[in-house]
Length: 293
Image 1: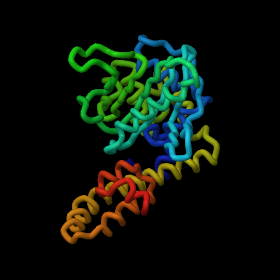
Image 2 (image 1 turned 45 degrees about the horizontal axis):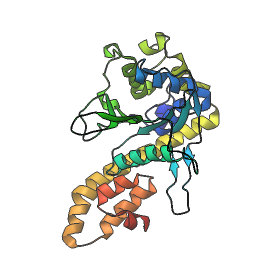
Image 3 (image 1 turned 180 degrees about the vertical axis):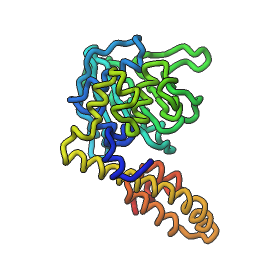
Image 4 (image 1 turned 30 degrees about the horizontal axis):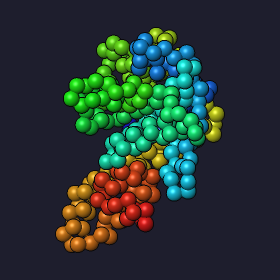
C-alpha cells in the first residue's frame, strides 16, 4: 500500500481496493447505481440490471453453534437474482471453501419450511488482489457446476466470478471493455484526480462522486483513515509472519521442538485482525490452536 494513511486521506478519491473504500462506494443503498453499473459491465449485455435492492449483509446461523456470515454486499435485482459481492486482498487456504459456503448460504436462506426446492439464481462476484489458484491468470474466471467429461453446464442458477486486479491493464487507454475500465478504476482510484482521463470522460461520474473524499462527513473520513491504518498494520503483520514466522521462526521452532515461536506469531497476526486461513497457512497451527490463543 503506497503512502501513509494520512497521505491517502489527503488525496481526491478513496482507495477502492481497501475494505472501507470498496464498501463505502459499492455497498451502500445511496450508491446503488455504482454497483448496478459494475454488474452490467461484468455481464456485457447478457443480463441487463435496471435496479438493485440491498439486503441484510449479516446471515445468522440457524443455531448457536453455527457460523455467522457478513458479506461486503448482498443485493437482489428486479428479476429476483441474488448477488453477493466481495473484495478479497489475499488468498488463504480456506478461501475457496469460504466462497462456496457463501453461495450455499444464499441458497439455504431462500428455503421455506414445507416448500419446494426452488430458489432464485445466486451469483457471487469476488474482486481479488491476486490470481485465483488453480485457474489460468485471467481478468475474469467464471465458475459453474458442470459435468466434468463433457463440459455440459448442469445449472446456470449458481455461479462464482473471480475478477483479478492483477490482470488489469496498466494504462487506461489499453482498456477495451467496460469491465476492464471499471476494474481499472477500482485498482487505481486513489491515484486519480479530476484532471485524469477517466474523470474527464464523464462516463463514471457516479463512481467518482461516491468515492470523493472531500464530500464525505468528517467522521467518515476518520473511519476511512483508521481502516487504512488497520490494513497497513495487517500487511506488516503478514510480512512479519512471512519473514520471521516462515523463514526464521518456523524453521528454528521446528528444530528446537518449540511451539512458543509459532504461537507468538499467530497471536500477533490474530491481534491485527488477519484472516484465520492466513494465520493457519503462515504458522502451521490448527484452527483450534489459534482459537485458544
